[in-house]
Image 1: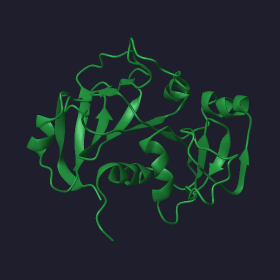
Image 2: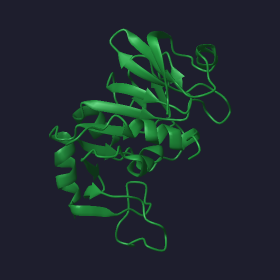
Image 3: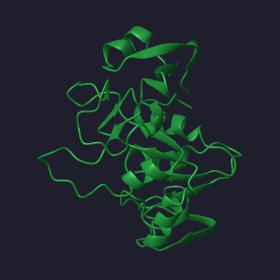
Length: 219
């Protein structure tokens, strides 16, 4: 099997955070891809705030049930024992602190663990969805994001400049280039994707960060 790169690498690395028995929410975009890279032998439940407990693998369009969609409106499935639930109950689970971890995409994230992922002032936004509730009600917030903007600008900043979705809530940041752990003392570079060096990451990251004594390889 060829080594994973790009967004597939991000999704597969995020999925490695999940543990047996976890109740996990996957946000729109890259996070929804995590469902296809779940750790073998790990028994967990995936929740979509749209109203699914027990989201399963992504089906092909030919096999898709038109009544089942993930948070991004893409086809999904429900595992044995899973259920479709109403929106109010879904948000009760989130706001009640019952979700162990969530994976969110972002527009910006910073070294203090702040995340801005719902609006760019002056541009149309359909709403913040469940992101603000997730940032307030979930203990482990994993950000899955391209390392840079399409124009090459930094997305991992010293301080977010867009309106915040959540303050000091992010615990981990995973990109196609590296993995940062967010600590009370700032970002710590924990892993590098194949082909990247610490100097490469410093060149494309505005945020300050320290480097772990034992930097691993994202795989």
